[in-house]
Image (cartoon, rainbow, N blue to C red; front, side, top):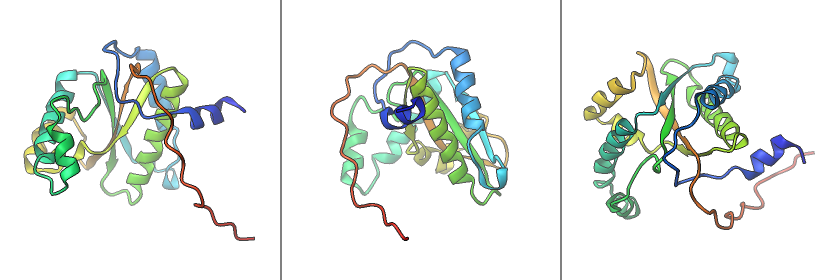
Amino acid sequence: MNDTIKSILGRRSIRSYEARPVEKDKIELILDCGRFAPSAVNRQPWHFTVVTDRKLLDKISAANRQVLLQSSDEQVRERAKDPKFDSFRGAPMAIFASGHKEAKYAAADCANAIENMALAAYSLGLGSCYIASFRHAIEKPEGADLLKELKIPENFEPLYALSLGYGNETLGERAPRRENVTTYIE
């Protein structure tokens, strides 16, 4: 089995991290992998924001928690009640992928970029977690200040984030993959 396949099959979502920062050269390489993701008509409608300021991530997480506490979904409310609630799972940093608002397939393109970065991180010995739930706080009117702090360019909207760092957890058994999800037409 080659290294690419090993990375795809081995990558897992990490939800606990060491506090140590990620080296700048690794961050740059991960960003390059995001930039080389496929995009519709090669439009590359993304902008990446690297946040290593844990205070800003905490601020976004706290705002997100307040929104989730008002959810009609009991499971979501219970998760938000956890005193250790953190949208970014304690990672020392996150990379946000924002899509150009006029690009028809920006969401899919940014998703491709985040997946490329998650695989690159895994191959470099880092853990990551693909995150979209932070958007609850940013989409509210009071989230405008968070957008400013994230320095999202005009005409872009944050779609996904990737928490990133050195994993600090022992992973259990991998959840089984769903079967019977393929149809062959010959």
